[in-house]
Image 1 (cartoon, chains in turn green, blue):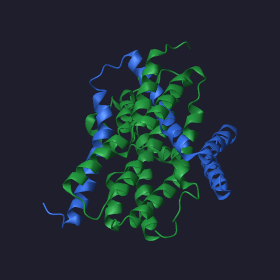
Image 2: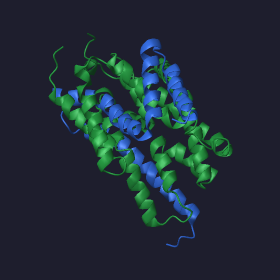
Image 3: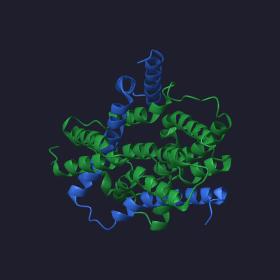
Length: 239
Length: 104
């Protein structure tokens, strides 16, 4: 077994930025497809190109951007703005859990370095970085290098998607609505460490299924993840 | 405030959402500075990535039907055999597109 990764101090390196970008390469085609689709949907819902691009630039969170665009109307009211803000929070509440998991790694960095770095955290970028971390790595540049490249791709792909809006009329027919779930599945395979370590995942999935049936919105992700995490904390290590 | 300023309110909405997202991103990291990192907490954090994946994917599959299930099965199979992330995603999306063009 590798040395406890938590004992290694975090650091930065130029080579790590490049390596992080390279590790994120498999995600890029999906990111382009996703970002283009977002641009297309935004165009169809009546957002301006500036609004769509600003969303990608400042929010950098696909799921919440899609939901926000779904809720977008020509006559936004202040109450509507508050509602959209609240929905954004529930969709992305998983970020709280994700960056919590970064604390043992990035906690050793000064705050002025770690807090800006958190801006580029996305699901795929974070998963890639966590995989690197669980293999014993400590270079924080992996997370940031991958994150910055994905961010640029995300913003850059929004624009042609918006402009070519009419071409991708039915992303579902091309299976593009499943890019994110497929990508998640890809990340799950190397995380496999035997059936015992997978027990929390099974619990998480089961709870999420039940909550998705009973509660509207995106709470199922939060409920399932917390349940899986608690189970993981209760199981004792045998290896 | 009247509703005749769609541009300004649109911008406000985007800024509100952006701020919310950053608070979420910084929040978990900040919170863990105030929670002692015991062995149990570390184990809980270690179980998180897989749990988030499972909790996100399963309900989507349940809602999207057989095409999604086949897509994920194809993705997992290609990933296990070839260990190539891009190929695996392409296989999954292709499988879904084929299923849907067949009307399933």
